[in-house]
Amino acid sequence: MAGTAWLWWSSGKDSAWALEVMRRNGDATVTGLITTVTETFDRVSMHAVRREILHEQARSAGIPLHEIRISHPSTNAHYEAAVAPLLARAVEDGVDAMAFGDLFLDDIRSYREGLLDGTGLEPVFPVWGNVTEDLATEMIDGGLRAVVTCIDPMRLPADFAGRAYDAEFISDLPADVDPCGENGEFHTCVCDGPFFANPIDLHPGDVVERDGFVFADFRLKECS
Image (tube, rainbow, N blue to C red; front, side, top):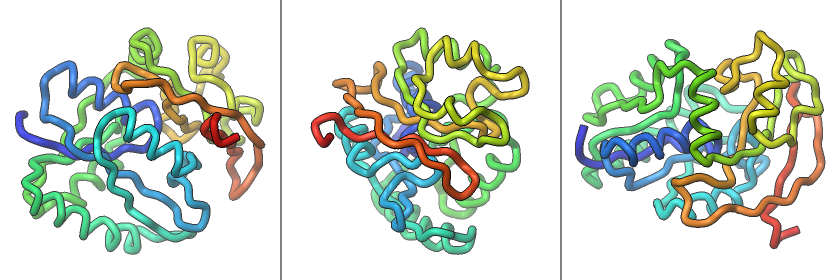
């Protein structure tokens, strides 16, 4: 497709690589990034990435950032109420599509499509259907650099939190864990890649367990 799109930006590797794929393929020009931020923690929802890192990502990508602020805990109804004004703004701004970094979960894709139903915005899934073993290698070989900010301890040992997302990390994953973490096994924060003008220098902090997940904190190095 041609035209303009806003990209649902999780701060992690898959949405970042969706941006890169759109750039490479000459798809719709991405003119905005959308991120859900949990107000209680002032961090990207689920990924637990600090807002200052999120804003640095957007600055390095050279794309305006739009935040959706939600409470903790939140319901689908609250989320959808928060999303609706932003979708309306996108339509008013002449945006043609919304892009997502989802890989293979049909229920998530259907939910995204339902959010856009009737808005006139086309849902776009640039990395959908990729074999995740191959996609993980493609991202790493393509220059993407990321750190693991959240893991599900029911699926991975706690010491996987805070590690670099690299070939060694992929090799160490249990056989039943998706190498892109698409089933929620882990989440990442991107700190470098061909989609950034400059790498983002991160300083590791505490690792904590909360709400059934293990989170590794990172700060911008100059803020440490």
